[in-house]
Amino acid sequence: MPSTLTPTVPFGVVDSMVSATVGSWTSMARAGLDYWSGALARRATPFDLGQDLTSWLAVMNDRERPQWANEHTVAREWPIARLRDYSTADADAGMVATIILPPQAGHDSSIVDYSPTQSQVMTARDNGCHRIFALEWVGATSETKDTSIEDFMQLLREVVELVGGRANLVGDCQGGWLATIFTALHPELVNSLAIAGAPIDFHAGEPLIHDWVQLLTPRGDMNFYRSVVAANDGVLPGSFLLHGFMTLQPDQELDRQLQLLANLHDPAHVERYRRFENWFQWTQSLPGEFYLWVVEHLFAGNELIRGELVVEGRTVQLADITCPLFLMAGETDHITPAPQVWALADHASTPEDQVGRQSSTGGHLGLFMSHESLERHWSIIFAEMAALSSPGADVPQELTDEPTGHGEFVVDVVTTPRPAVRARRSSTRKAAAATRAATKRAPRAKAAAPSAAATEAPVTEASVTEASVTEASAKRAAATGASATEAPAKPSTVGEPAPAQDTPAPRARQATSTGKAAADKPAPRARKVASSGTATADKPAPRARKAAPRKAASKPASAARKAAPQQEKLTDEAGPQA
Image (cartoon, rainbow, N blue to C red):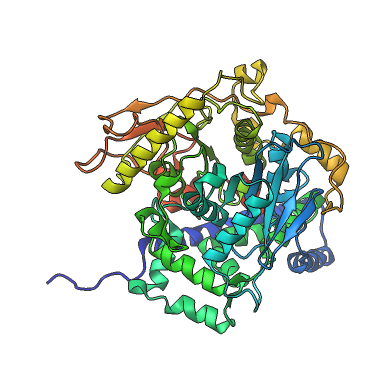
């Protein structure tokens, strides 16, 4: 007789626990070997070992509030946010401003200006976005605990109006889907949209967070999350989210602490550890009402991609988005798998040649602050965004799509949008194309194009993993120092664009078609995906695109984590080697 029992714990949760157990034992073995090898090499006495233990515990527990690294001013404050202005002193007032929306997951927003040499906002400025702003999310209080999604939409309207009435939005993680919702509701206010590690299709790929949400909300029951908010007087403590992130990959948390012990006598490692832990461990609360709305309608209901999300009394239609799109994903991102990010291109009405995808080899946090992401990917995104924003500039003919340096292809089965959405997207895309054709001017060279030397030089693995900084970053580090914070005046010098040799040359997009293109859509183009297979009767023919250096997106979550080298953990997640 067949069993009527069904598993109550999703496979992804079980798989992550097994992987974390193996990873923890591996971390302990490696750290133990490293520490005792060092102790023997320096002929440590029992007294020295005792001192090491005391120092290790002291460093692990010594936390300070994270700081914004580079000089800027605070343009305006609201109860729920601050607007920080990093614009150059001589920025063209006619240039479309760029606004960065940081992650909003219980941490400080300063990750977008993490250090003098690892700064998303300064990378934007150095690559031509001279009018650059960053939002800072303010921790929730008893007065702001009832802040809703509508309040954040109103905030973004006021911010865009303040910087000129039209802006480029750059959203990291939670800031990405927030910017996407705003763009769909107010497409006339957004010049271009960039998202990094931002879930649009919350159920795509192998989302570990979705598995946990399923476990904690059986049959849609939100009582667990509501009880957490109610127990904390209407706010969600940032520590709740911090411990949740640690639970996703406890082996990485253990490894980071043990590597501190193994490298306790390396001052540079200790300093990098302090900087990252100050940001990672410092938490702030979220408005309870907003958090519950996010869990119910986005993480559990996936209403944004289903076309059922209602905000400000209107249904959010991704097909209303027609502006240029920049999509950024991490190959080993266990928080937001790449297919969750790529989904925006499948549902927006943006023309195919105005969608640029970038794949970083790192994980989730590395998307916003690692050297590789900033120098190899964000420099390209911001240079093209600047070309879209400069007065009198022509729209780039084609955005850079996956300059990975690899000519590999992966076949995908792409989920077909609902017929009504597809028809609406097609008509909106055609209207947008007609508008651009009517206003098209003579083509102009792209801003910040790579030099001939950069075009001819091959991209090597060493160029990815080497912890180098650009000339502009080095100048900032020398000028500001590691402890630079906000200043009452704008910086006296203008950031120089990154040297051409540090930016990989954009390569021509290669695309193959494995089936007949839909009549109302342009021919499909190559893109990286989570899995391969053949098209079904109700799905379009699979599309191919360049693959990233590792096909991590097509592996199970545990395999992707195991495939990530230990060096990458320190570079993109823990910060010490970044």
